[in-house]
Image (tube, rainbow, N blue to C red; front, top):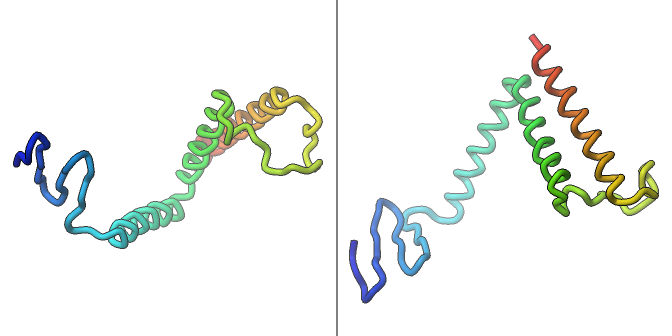
Length: 119
């Protein structure tokens, strides 16, 4: 550890920590993007090879949405369409949120049943 005035400069492996900012010395933004992209690509290839576990991935996304509905997060409670395409558009926002909670919960239960019954 080096001291420059009162601010320590740590040099650990590939990063240098100065004034609360990480400087990556050996990777560029393109390298980071390619590494992240390859990890995501490998994950989704694995999901295609094991479709049963893709159901669990879907349940995880639905559980995140359900948590958003239960905690009244704005992104989870808003409708996607601003038209009269939905049966419950004339209801109060709390009623729509409760309907979504029931539908998402039912979908999670059905997908989990399908996961455990699948041989």
